[in-house]
Image 1 (spheres, rainbow, N blue to C red):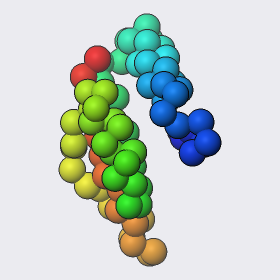
Image 2 (cartoon, helix red, strand yellow; image 1 turned 45 degrees about the horizontal axis):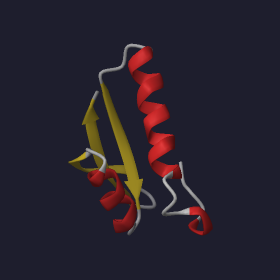
Image 3 (cartoon, rainbow, N blue to C red; image 1 turned 120 degrees about the vertical axis):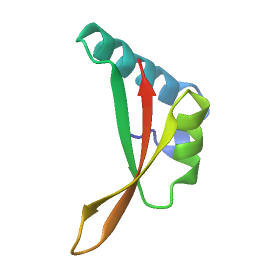
Image 4 (cartoon, one colour; image 1 turned 60 degrees about the vertical axis):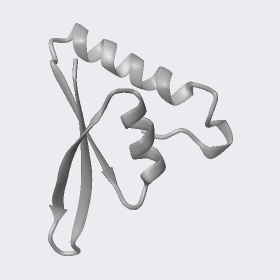
Length: 75
């Protein structure tokens, strides 16, 4: 999920995440875990600002080696 750079800082990302969280709650989910790959500190900062906590790193591919950051939020 992403918002084009031309449309950032208008609340769209927060609205998208709020809709996801509402849908998840309504379908019985109690936690959301996000995976964020690459050097996207701005994305991680956004998720932290709306209540997501760092949940460590995970290797999702060995060859080529790919690591992603995980963020999680209890609903």
